[in-house]
Length: 358
Ligand code: GLY
Image (cartoon, rainbow, N blue to C red; front, side, top):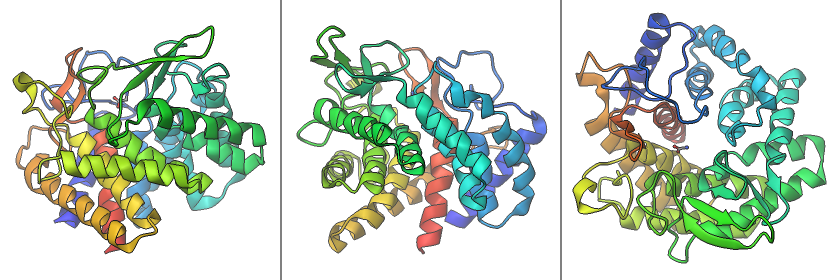
């Protein structure tokens, strides 16, 4: 079933790049990638080539040329100061390419992207600021701070390492709650650096748990532990994973927000499920305790089985995406119950991980 899903993913991506060459979509509208709705922020361009790199590394060399072509277009963005998403953009593309070849020119791009992201660090408050404003920290940045760790290790730059560590510790302190749930955003006093309150952009409320944010935390703290081997990050990733598993329905696919109100509680976010599946598989490798590791692996496979059985677009020839049922920004009405490119990417990554483990 997982192998068939991966084959279907490859066919949908091939059809997309033949239909609309060099187009880099973020989310579908009524199942179509090409539309005129806004992006809100430009963070998705690494995911499509990232899928190509995964399929290429699985042994299909026909993906190499388009993967390189779509990746090279990102090169100027190593200097992009507008977004906090340089990990999403570069780890999925230059990171995978570099892992395949060891080419130092590719490593130089990754290092610059890490240095550029580190420029968002605010000493007062000790966090990498989000794209919306100086006083804002997003849980999503836990998925991007990995590129700062990468650059710090590649250059042995203690200053960069310090920034990455302090960002993770601040996020842990202010956005991860005692029960393992997470807030989407934190707001700081710019004068003093004091943490003021939890807030949200895409979740239901400041005190709710936006499902995708929790999935970013589960995965991102696992990655931080992989880089830094600081036990606090592993404990945090496990707390988020335990909350996800306990709060989800038995099929492993969460409502768009774990505290969603009755009127839209039935709306799921399959992209949160795909991210969680991949993050749980990573955690299964990292967890020292064999019983815990088995629990995380089983939970990930349960999520993937549900996604393959119930949310694959394979039965709908008009639908251009891979996975149905993603939600981008409910309040803005963008990408609601649609395919979303990060959902496609982490779904393919999770399938690849699960198949390799098997
Ligand atoms: N802004 C990143 C996300 O929608 O998860």
